[in-house]
Length: 98
Image (cartoon, helix red, strand yellow):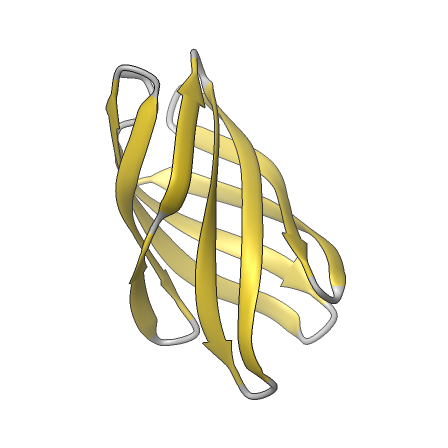
């Protein structure tokens, strides 16, 4: 599908830009894969795909403890963009397929 691939991403957070990586695989409307965030690789949870749009959740370890992040994004060619919803507020996300 259009979302499959590995992406280098950047989240604009109150703590500055956070770099990461997504490894995405769509099977029908189900999205699976991993996210490398804050130095750890974590599985995607509740992943869904609708055409070029997708969403999922991850649980990330941060200096302030574990937090749940919900990401809603869209792929356009090799670029992705969207927003991460965190306990600290929304964070714009951009990325490029590698």
